[in-house]
Length: 343
Image (tube, rainbow, N blue to C red; front, side):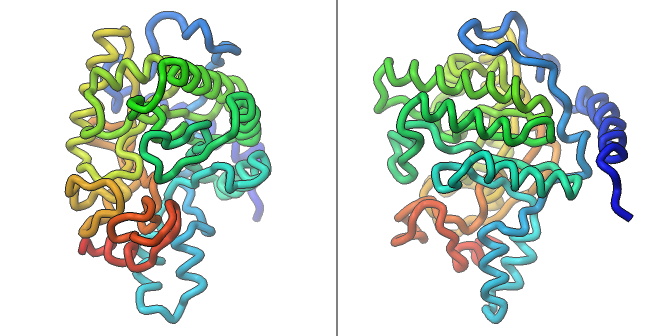
């Protein structure tokens, strides 16, 4: 029998109330709510948001992820079963950028599929102008701040009142070394505006600004970057996106970032850790290192709010390492297969 939408929402509301009470026990003291007024440059004003983790019955597993599509297209390959069961069957984030075409249609379709299954989708917005400006492997993004504002507004509008988690622009706060102060200010303005649009247009979405990884910049510097980008208005921040550092290293760093936020700005935030490829920790290399392994998925603990798979295991970081000759985001079945077993 088909469950009606009204019944679904009633059940979700019940779960939301229970989950909200439970979440208060899980988060560090002071996490989740900003002290003081919202950043004066961010408008419209944020509205009270629901708890998307309590509105759904678990995380969404994308049936059309790149490993799922590869396994389905290559059933006779000896690696297909392992990739299907070890990677494609796990909940992962879906990345959205210029390749997504009509962003409203793309996001709406994905979130709609998750909502129909009563599951929570995790999405990544990756289209800020000058994306990966200092790294270069994943360059691109919207052509202008105005174009980005239109794009991110359509992104948030397509989610609407449905529950979701959204990581906003990985890498955007980790490296300012190649940016002028004018470009830094411009980037911060775009991020603050993005947070404001999600708060106004997607009230049941938790947003996370990206805070890099433990080996990139100091926790005190990252706290400054987060606050400059409007972290008061975000639900939290993300760590280790597309990287390999062990969960313990990330939680120590996340807690240090929060200590700096508290000391310098008067608030702390929950954070999530990308554990998709950190099962063996980091070798010190970030671009397709060999010998890495998948990690825990969709769990609580260790000081983080959640551990999630944000990068898809087996998708290339760029033309480097064991992914030599590939493009960033390209699915590499041999890399994925070895990552399941850690060699």
